[in-house]
Length: 86
Image (tube, rainbow, N blue to C red; front, side, top):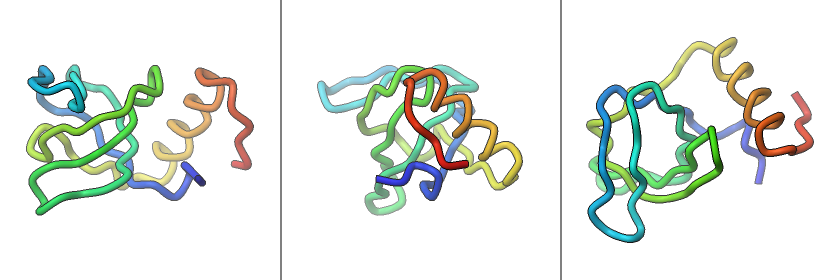
C-alpha cells in the first residue's frame, strides 16, 4: 500500500479507546486514514508507532498542506524503517 497517497489527519482532541479495535490518541498525533465510515469514524494508522484502529472523526482535522504531508511521510519512514519513494 502506498502510504503517500493516504489522507492524513491531526488529532485535535485526545481519545481513549473503548473497544479492542479502537485507537487511543493524543492531541497532535498524526494518523493516516485508511477508510471512513458514515463520516463519523475513521480507521487509521498512528504515525509515531504504526498502531492501527478506529477513532471518531470529530477528534481529527484533515491535514491539507502538502509540505506537512510530505514531511510526515518522511518522518514515518524513518520511524518505521520503511523505504519511502518521496
